[in-house]
View 1: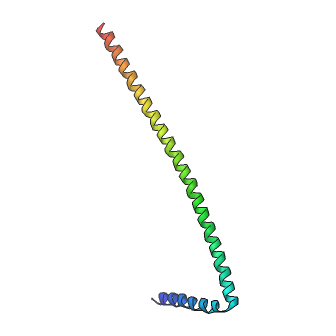
View 2: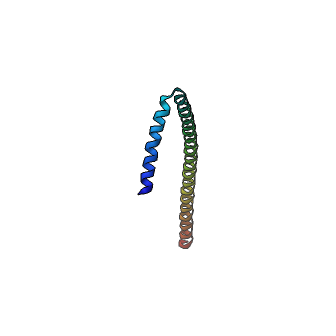
View 3: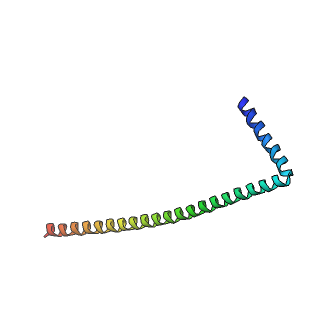
Length: 98
């Protein structure tokens, strides 16, 4: 509980100090510079995130297409195998009947 009190006092003190620094023209300039750097950093992080998201979306689309192609090939192979077995059974039945 004591740690929480110190944490809250630290936050409140930081706001008071920032308010006092912002009143001074030099302090206002420093805070504006810090704000600009933070904004630049967050913009870069957002751009990098969107770039990675687009890259992963492309990768997911490629994997989905490859899986669909593999499933289609497997379906075609199974269909061919069933057809071959049916033909073999028909041939065997004819040979037995003859």
